[in-house]
Length: 447
Image 1 (cartoon, rainbow, N blue to C red):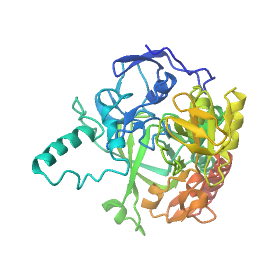
Image 2: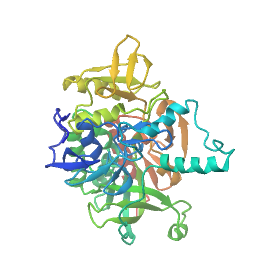
Image 3: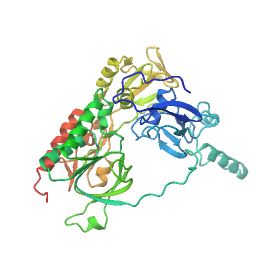
């Protein structure tokens, strides 16, 4: 069993029961409920997979289920996001696309053989026999894992749900908006859906944020808000029912895959008198050579490791800001310092590899140290856009931001709040959500 354990910091919540999981036949210490990728990181395992084409090592990056860098084979199912899969006793995980093993992968020679890039469309096409052999080799090298070893369970029948207010996102903006709404409209039914295993969103990467997130969630539920976690909204659709609705020319059904945390698992078709999107933002990388190496994590992933999971991110943390101001970095540095984790602000890197050479001559070993990539997060504006909300590209605010009126309205019967209109930070997002929720409750067109 792996002897190293980086869980040397106080976790945001008490840890679950101790357990062990199996990683490529090796037992790894874990705690029930913590993400598989976090348990592996805490055990010193940074390489979680290999890229399909060049077999470059892949590891934890965002820690929030949005980047695909931590895909593993878990309990026989390929391409599972290990950073949001809860650990449990006897869980089996494998690092895919590796031969003979993840740390020394012979097929990684492709990266060395083709330093200028691999044109697989024209490579080895001059000889039929050579092409047949090459295709077999590519099939062995490529892909992201074998097919499942077990038959997938039969999905439950889709269910329909109608509410007065449907909120997507249980971060500070979504919870505050729902709370403000139900307090002003106590007879209305409001539900908040979130894909995470706990409420809080961006707060979970903040020093002391876990407690603040729990307080916001408790406040919302006490006010009468229904909270459904592990529920991923996958699309907004216009169907026969919405097309015949009075004055409706927009999608009116939201498809949500639920895990059953507050009922039966399966597909929910949600219709609502009003939708409110507080979908937050995604962590981004910076356009640097070799920016995909394990040990290069998003700044908020470093925060989640330290402040939520109680895992020491690295021997040292080197914070690398992006071109746009990102106020989160100040709090990250202060929070790490308070925990006794050495952390430095940007010093130019002259060379990035498994070892990073800094302009001062210092070196970081990415097997032990961490680079916290401080790019400004990108607004998660895809769902609002499907639902008729206009977006505009604004690099200084992170990317494609949702456009709304002063009272938060982005489209007929659709409101927007929080970081989806550009990075705000948790405190401002909570205030924005409360303002939009109150404005929504004050509208005169409620039945």
